[in-house]
Image 1: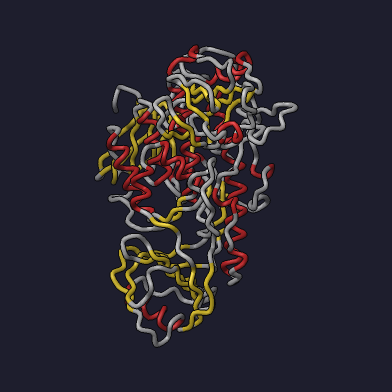
Image 2: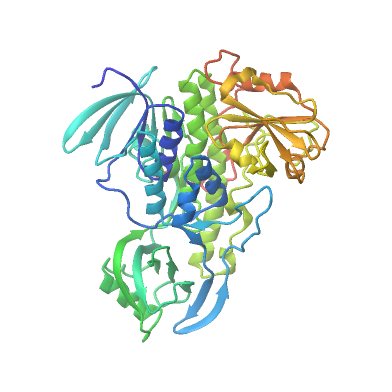
Length: 536
């Protein structure tokens, strides 16, 4: 066992674990990330990246690579046997706006997303340790002692905190004794995989909703493959996971006599849809995130995205506490993320019910799936501000806006948000650089058109920033944006004393009063689909 205590040990190197490790590493926090699988995942499973997740990936510095690896979601072509009977758009595309420049989901195979995040992590000096399984762990008041196994050899690791991002079968969750409450649709099975298909137009997502034996869908992927989803109705036999058996099933059930040839399957698996979640995200110094905490039906493209945002919420809080902030900050992770998971599970479950019944309209995706509107209003880091009627309040996603920098070059507020810091947007002629918080807070003065611009300021040429934050030109306001892109504090006009009172206990290396306490949420207190159901 190493005599030195590692700050954070992450179990699981899927999108959730990789996001967390990247966020910690860029903050200068030493982290190890291990995965029991011998090699990286190769499939497309979680292929849909929602707009809010794209913003997270932008902040982590990998958005350009993600955009290059993906494509827009294709329109659906609805088939009945060999006939096209309809065309449909599952999620109507939205036009970019000043505050949401990327409003649509982006299709990227999960394996490619993971590869991009691994490359980013490697650039930060951290390599994923595959073939390394967590065997057991214990914890005490100062840390966690974990036993890892690799090639039959055991290693004991001491860490200040351990995070389980190890999927639906999470060893960490089981060791903690946390139950995934909800339902598993044992009678519903879906064969999923990545295949090549000859004789099928790659510009459309092809769906046979009334195929004999169950719905068949083939969605084109970047690189020439299709993602297969083949529903197996209750009581029917799951076909063998071979190219020949799957090809025959499609020929018989969806396109009899058609000249389709399915081949070169790189990944095939059987999936049983689950709608389950835990009622705790933390037990002392051990946390869980992503599928370890909540498992989703495949509909809606929410599982991967919700896990990434779990990690994004936890990363800055762990980083701050490890650098000296009040440990009570870590209590806010569960308080903020558990209710979001409950609401997302409800949406995913509704869409899945529509899919299993063949009701295409019921599967229509709405704006809520873009995950831009989730808010932490009223939570311990976003107390209600009496009398504040502004459109954007503490707890909301911080809107973007196009501006111009001191050199006259176009710049967005998101460019100023990017990085591990807090961002203070200072509006108004009397707004000054409040440097007393040091490098942890980046101050950006928002100057209206016609005002001389300074080095730390941006010119709001068209007034988009002022409108987004409900600040009238010429008036003052202080808008504090958290490291994860949510508004932490607002004051209109700017109230520096109130800002300091809010922010001081949250910053690293500062001793201060405790964060406002809030009882941990129970699953039954949230709009959740799992209340009253026995644990697995």
